[in-house]
Image (cartoon, rainbow, N blue to C red; front, side):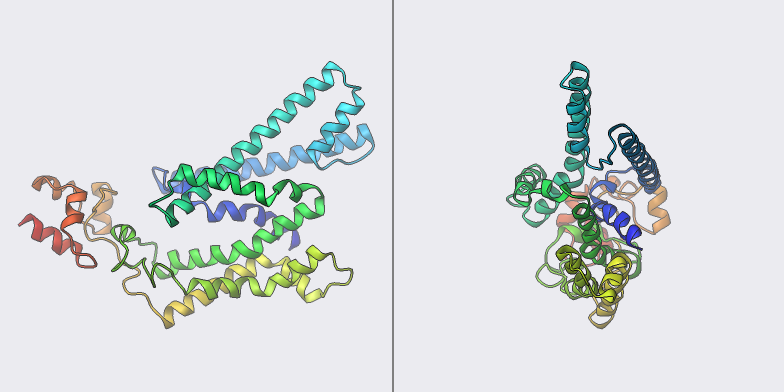
Length: 323
């Protein structure tokens, strides 16, 4: 279970940020194929190459080097600074540098930029948010997280402790409560929106998130402290942090929504305000297509939104405007 928890922990950040990139996909099928295939291919190849490299280094240098910078230094020392060793270390270092840069731009800077732009849209756009995230990363000193193998593994496991409850809440909200139905016009409103909640905060998610990581945080603490005799139940719970956090938060969030329901959570726009769907998709969903009706009256999605009553019936407002 510890290995599974660590493996999922390495993917947890990507799971929570998946919507930052899935919205650019032309179809759900394309996103699923790309995500699953990339996880399988890169996961297998990276693990295989790492094992082969560590095994080869042990045979050549007599010691296992799991940290790439340490291995590069050994290669340089054993090559006595020759041109061949310098060239090999240079190209390998460049590969690691570009890999780290691309991964952090996609996985951290862009995701952080989108989050900050969503929180402070008046002052921050995605580019500014990405720059702020990049500068804030230096405060965290991430290079300290990979100086030892045990520290690196602990960091991966800690992702499961805190991010698994978030994933459980998001999955419960989208699949169980909203039934995979999103009311797009309400995403761009403040008050009188099913997404505004209480002053813009869905307070139900906070206790659900806390309940998700509370049982496993003790195991993380004793692991970080390297206690010689940690409590076995704490460690066992920590080894199952992802599953425990995911399901506890999902259940608590679901029950809180039953006790304090949000009106019209599973509703969608009766009119395809933004021209999101094709005519066939709109008919399948039972949505009035703008290409069928609004174009005949010369109405754009923006004009329709200006005439619709906030929180009212979109289809009625649309018909009244046409008349």
